[in-house]
Image (cartoon, rainbow over all chains, first blue to last red; front, side, top):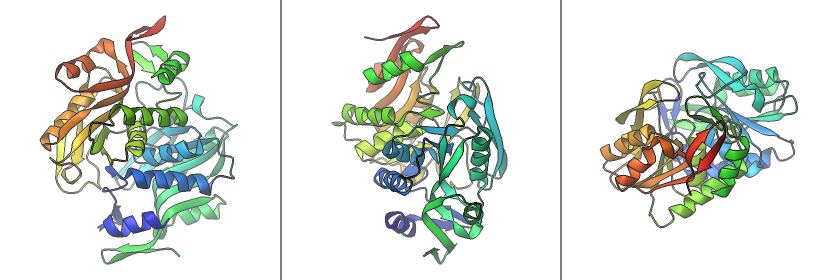
Length: 190
Length: 190
């Protein structure tokens, strides 16, 4: 997606540890015209896939998932990272690891919001090694739901998570797919 | 907002401890047609207020803030609840307390995303005692920004936070304002 690639080149900052800082338009501060364009694009990419629900994990995936959900007119469910007071009843749980925050965490989703009738589109802001997506896949699997695919804003292709999922037959579509990056510049996969 | 009130009556569950569970359409699972309608309504309510940015706090306010931002075409900034690896540089910080989770937490926002030129609309899913909003007000004040007002999906009027803010002269608009609630039923403020 040209608009997103241009924004990354213009405003993204490569920090040590393979971190791409996009706080000025995707995290922290969200460019809502870009957000709407990303939601519309995801809607186009999966329009033939009979998606029944979008799944994301709190918190930076929520805005993109919401934008995609508005255009696709399907509900968005989001996994929470820790059990909170207002989730009652039974939950599905999966473990994941955040490289950004350097910790392990549990992803939790209420059983009542996902079922074997669902065909789930996973949405997230970043895909690197694929830990968050694997956690979401596990939640969907536990519910017996099918996976329509995964829509990602920015994939760090050089970290391999996206290609591993593609090799498993999952339809992964990234709006910007970075082949390599350093302080000298960012190269997108052709 | 009639649509939201009807949804609360139909699907909301009053739990012990003044908790209103709206996980089937607002948290956990988001009804995206309703979300778009709420975003549009907030946009109408503040169309004359020259809002430059929307502020919310992670994570359940993000979807509504994003929807409002898409219709108002202003950026959304969100305060994070703990310092994470990809916020660099200087931050504004405010303390708050969550009754839902029963803990204190810090709200943090990068100084680079908010300034004294801003006229901020605060957006959140719930307003009860007003702790989260007060934290956001403190962040905006530290940046020297003006406050256009606060837009809330569901206000629990009986907990007083909204009326305290109105008494301070802040334009608070809640899409559904609950006067009282119990397992017997929910009454909205006329």
